[in-house]
Structure formats: structure tokens, C-alpha cells
Length: 204
Image 1 (cartoon, rainbow, N blue to C red):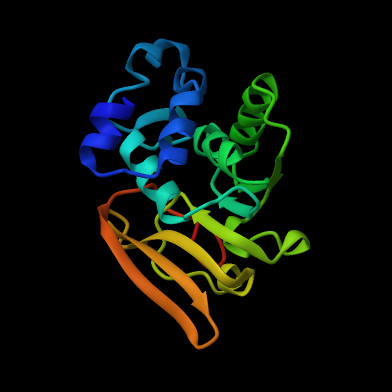
Image 2 (tube, rainbow, N blue to C red):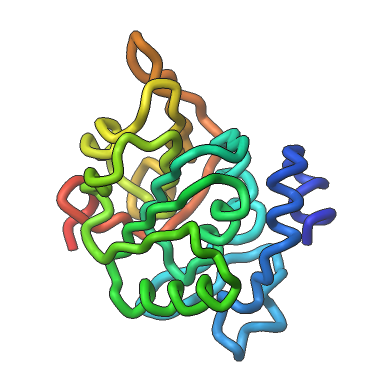
């Protein structure tokens, strides 16, 4: 997976490559799909949600440029795979997941793997987690029609935010950097994610 789906497609950060080699992706999918866990495709995890394809996880993670001491906010933990990758790369991960059953599932697997630097909250991800703001990096693992204002407000100066923006069926992955003069924007390519539901996303 690391060689064929990440390195061969341009993922270069050695820390990201090592983290994704360390995390057992098969533990974050349904047992019936374990033999497909390392394929280059998203997979269903229940409740109409998916685990992102390995390449997309690598691309989004690399875009955050994590160096080890950061406090990261993740919106949409799903089964917890992306969470585990982030936990390998930063100091603390704070996750907001809308679906309680998925949050419980993620917590159980993360605890089994001893990722104790992760906190998970059940709620509206578009509101962020203000109690722990500001964050050095924010990763949104669901597509939104626009950039949620509360998340921008919880991003630290110099911090990076990665989000899929666009319609319900297709988005462009964007990275924003918060600078003293405002947000700088980079386009990272086309993508397709499940909808980000919430007050500042798509209506439920």
C-alpha cells in the first residue's frame, strides 16, 4: 500500500509514509471487508459513511505538514483510521464525530491500539471544538458547500486547514493557511466525500 498507492502517486513526507505503514488499516473496517482494507478505494463503515482510500488519507495528512508537536482537530472521525494516522504524527488529536455509534467504534479500536493522545466528542463538527481551540491544524473528512466559519475561527495563526469543498457529488480538496493578512488557499485536486452535515455544512 505504502509503495504502490502513496509513494508511486507522489506522497513524499517520510513521517506520513511511516505512520500509514504503522497503522493496521484492516482493524478499522468491517471484518467481512478486511481482505480489501489495503485496496486503493474507499470502503463502507456503516451509517452511510466510508473510510477514505489510502491515497486520500495520505494526501490530506501530508498537506497539514505536521512535525510532531501540534494540536489537531479532526472533523468526522468515522471508524478512526485517519485519526490513528494523525495520532502517530502530532501531540494531540481532538475529533468531533456526528454519529455516536461510529465514535464508540473508533474509540474502542484506538484504545486497543493504545492511541491515548486522542479525544472524541459526539456533536456537530461544523462548530468545531472551541474548548480546545486554537488548533495548529484542522482536517475535515467530509465534503462541505462552503468553509465553516467556526472552524476558521479555531485555526491558529500559521495553522493549516484541509477540507473538500463543492457540491454533494464532487468536491475540490483545498488547503487554507492562516496568515496575518488572511487565508491563503491551495487546490489539491478533485475528490468525492460524504456530506458534511451540520449548521455550517449541509442540512441533515
